[in-house]
Image (cartoon, rainbow, N blue to C red; front, side, top):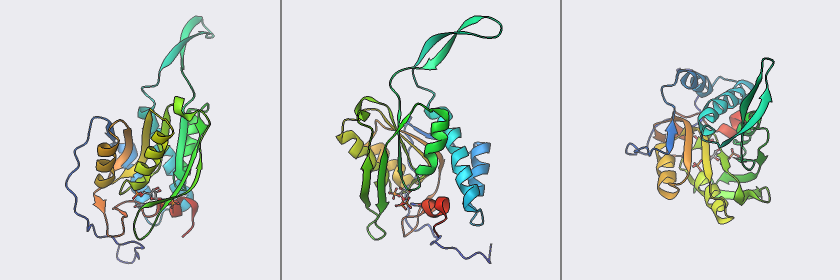
Length: 231
Ligand code: PRP
Ligand code: URA
């Protein structure tokens, strides 16, 4: 460990009380598959190609739960043995909303599972001084307000980006919104639970807190840079 030069401040300086998780918040700490994959992602020596692949795998693992409530309808099918009644997902097509950039890595694995889903794009970045989200791109499917929405972002740190995105989606009439992430800080989870109690959170791992620069500790570092190899 001694010869690794850490790019980000590693000290947990923002002390935060333990967050009380609401029943609508789903966290998977302790799940062997998720813990082992996230540990490889945390490792500073993991290359970008592997990091991206692991984002995809963990996204699919939490999607298993995030999609469990979807309504189904019956469909007659014939197996090689006999006719039977199968199921298919009913209702309007879902909308995936990756928060650019890092959320893009979660979009394709979700599409693999629900290929019928539409995609909307929310481009925001955190101002490095204020940590407030700055919007630079917004493109949603026309009739998004009548569809179930899944906001995708690997990192829920202060919660500012997720709160901004969900608030904008509500302004245009979206009623059923879920958030899916890889790592959450107590601060971000607390903010989302308080401001958007109607939004279900599916987050692979709850970490300890934030450092002085608003990075999650122990975290993954800058997820966008690690996914796209920009640092
Ligand atoms: C990261 C991350 C989230 C945001 C989380 O994006 O992907 O969108 O920070 O932080 P918050 O909860 O405090 O808002 P970043 O602004 O670094 O942009 P990038 O994905 O383009 O790198
Ligand atoms: N954004 C990231 O990419 N990582 C963090 O730890 C916090 C915000």
